[in-house]
Amino acid sequence: MASTLTERLSRAVKTMRGQARITESNVQDMLREVRMALLEADVALPVVRDFIARVKDQALGAEVVGSLSPGQALVGIVNRELTATMAGNDIGGVSELNLAAQPPAVILMAGLQGAGKTTTTAKLAKHLIEKRKKKVLTVSADVYRPAAIEQLKTVTRQAGAEWFPSSANDKPIDIARAALDYARKHYFDVLLVDTAGRLAIDEALMREISELHAELKPVETLFVVDAMQGQDAVNTAKAFKEALPLTGIVLTKMDGDSRGGAALSVRQITGAPIKFAGVSEKIDGLEVFDASRHAGRVLGMGDIVALVEQVTQNVDMAAAQRLADKVKSGDVFDLNDFLEQISQMKKMGGLAGLMDKLPTQMTAKAGAVDVDRAERDVRRMEGMICSMTPLERRKPDLIKATRKRRIASGAGVQVQDVNRMLNQFEQMRDMMKKMRGGGMMKMMKRMGAMKGMGGPR
Image (tube, rainbow, N blue to C red):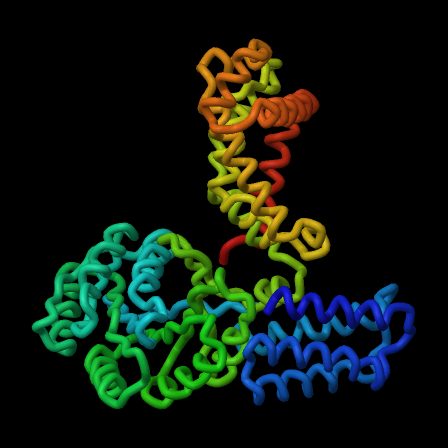
């Protein structure tokens, strides 16, 4: 949805540029683009109608503030309504997990097969351990899907939580009772229950999960839905809403979703807040859902807060300090340092991960093909440096024609590729010389300060 809606809005803004007032005519033009973008993004028709009506009510006759053009003013209104649609009554657009219960707080995971419940259960366990400092137990009540229990065991171990054993021969209700009893006796803060999914909604599934809910009395019942399902996600959401008192939604596979309509539709259909978004397949690829930040991404405004969080969480600050001290003391920036910078960038998700969080206007000229090419170039640079001897890395000036041919052969590239990489290294070295006054750590500290102002909640 992000790319489509951003493109359509940009086109509409251009046509409205220079007009001093938002009129019914130019509002209709832009809303037509917004409507088409939302429908193409698989947003449910009733949701689209309601959204467009609210934007129109706010926009008609509105005075342009300051130097904003009508198009830019309307983008602001669309941004506010996108946030409101996804946030509902959640203060600040974020809905926290409710763990206010006599331990263990039970969280029931519900959804269709293939939505990603099992991996999301482990991701949530990791989130609770690291962000909420909880002792977490997981259990699988999925006795139908082959290897579901073993899968949960594996991903739970990766998350650093404890797994309660269950068997395909047991009844789900018996598994749940045993896990709850174990969690109480061993003083767990949270029990995560992964339930069975089906390839489609059926009465047996709904009856079983309703019985589990009645037995466990969970503080949170999370509906896990694949963001790429589009209209199917709406139908699934309706069925689960009728069977269970849903308290929250987890949207999975947000990283692979070019349309994103589920985020708008499911929130409105169920009335339950979106609490988390799965943004990658990695065990830490779960984000607390922030409606205002997601709206910014959709409208091409980027997510600078998320970028700052990514930097501060993944950058090795000790390594950055060592490099800063080295540069400040006048020591030469060498190819080992250059390799370390490449490694740091990869920890932050590579170029694609960083570009995704920057505003569209900053990345418009860098298409997917350019980013892919740049990512390949980075991997090749890494290969070339790894083909060098320790002495060559410490003293790049030693690398002349014969050494270049050997390095190129070892890395599977051409000599001109080695020359290009060395030129880029020289540019980086020149930049480091200019930062001898401690500029690098000042920049890092500023990033840390930004995190404190608008970072994780």
